[in-house]
Length: 151
Ligand code: DQA
Image (cartoon, rainbow, N blue to C red; front, side, top):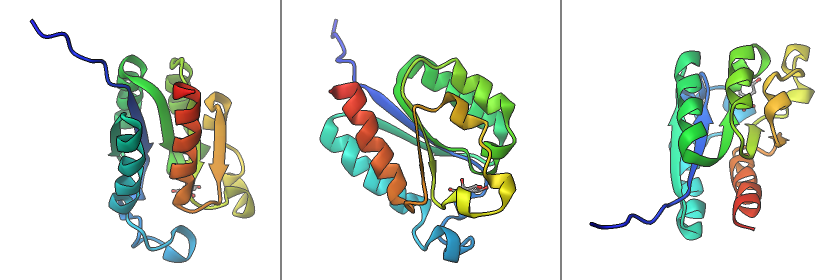
């Protein structure tokens, strides 16, 4: 019988329309694709010896199901909930069931934009929030998460 080594897993979840990153309003969100972001995040988790699950969905229920999965399997969550940030009590409730560091990332500076983007339900469950750092925000969140889980 082989005894498996438990590898720590980080979930990075992306909400609606982020599949179009690079094509969608590049003046706000930049020219990089979500695949580019995943590649850079993978370099960080590989170097740290962690497994990365990098996921995107346009469906709220799917994001909730992944949070439930992360609850059992992950050491931390980074989430860009996109427009669900500002609407979803369901995502907040799901995140509230997770006892681990949670980072909320926004590519744009939501506080500089329309007033409906100034409020976040998800922030009530977040350990930290990064906004306005472009796609680099994912890496910044990842470094902070690694510091918290690996010391
Ligand atoms: C976003 C900001 C949200 O207000 C918006 O709905 C998005 C992306 C960001 O990354 O800046 O889709 O979360």
